[in-house]
Image (tube, rainbow over all chains, first blue to last red; front, side, top):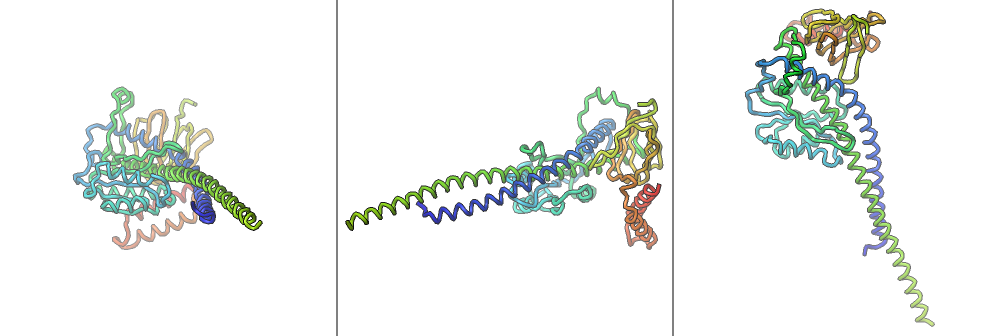
Length: 285
Length: 134
């Protein structure tokens, strides 16, 4: 049995760890609230963007546009959004796993890493890191999303990559976060049912179909990347909040167990001392 | 809703900028300036930097609109704007500075700066300044 002093020291160290996890939980709770609000504010933009782009594409059949066909290169680009800091449970490793098991081999995949943790983990697995945009995760803005999407689109236009994917964690609600991969380019034309398609009037484009798509699809991509960034921030804080909550609970449990052990040891020591004194007194008399 | 009004939605990544019935909306596209009334032919247009003028029951309102695209339907117009500002949100000092910088760059011999970019910057700055002064 461990000595009283050992138990006491151990308890103290767990208590200070618990204070840290508690503080971290509070911080991420506040951050989560803010990130959630931002995600909600921008949601109407993405919903409308998605609606508009799909309705535009549904009405323009037979277009032969590189953004719809995919490039010739067999290489794929993956924009992997993770966090800069750890202690968020499985948040980062889930994304890494998703990329690794999602049919992206290390040889023909270029990683556009947003977030240090994912960058390091993927680099260790032998993936080539094309761009490191980890600073963005500190507070993603729309301008950041524009910069990233420009970078990836340039690679697409230059023929370096043929397909573009976005790997991020979708924020369903505070407790459910779902890592997933989204195909950005070539845009997959959704299967709109015949009725809805006919109900809508024929759409005209200005200046012309091709030019309009040239302009709209990069904006569509940017908005998806921005949405991904914002949801990832919310998920990160949600994941950290959960991880820290269970860490705090575990610490509490350990402290209770150690308190019990400590009290038992203390009682044992007192009993032993008493027995010794009584035995000593008896021996004298 | 009066007979000649339609719903105008202006949405940015951060907020819903405007969502109300209007009688007319004017803005710049790549093809030039356009004004849209109710029952316009369905059309998708790309925005060029310029002033957006909304006319509703309270009279005309201005805003500086920089990029995005518009989906026009007979009963509804949706502007997906990447950047848009009301006149009182414009930082006039910064816009003036940006205009001077862009003008200086355009005067330089070609090749030193990206001319297209400088031109776009100039147009954005002018749109901001004009929106703020009106």
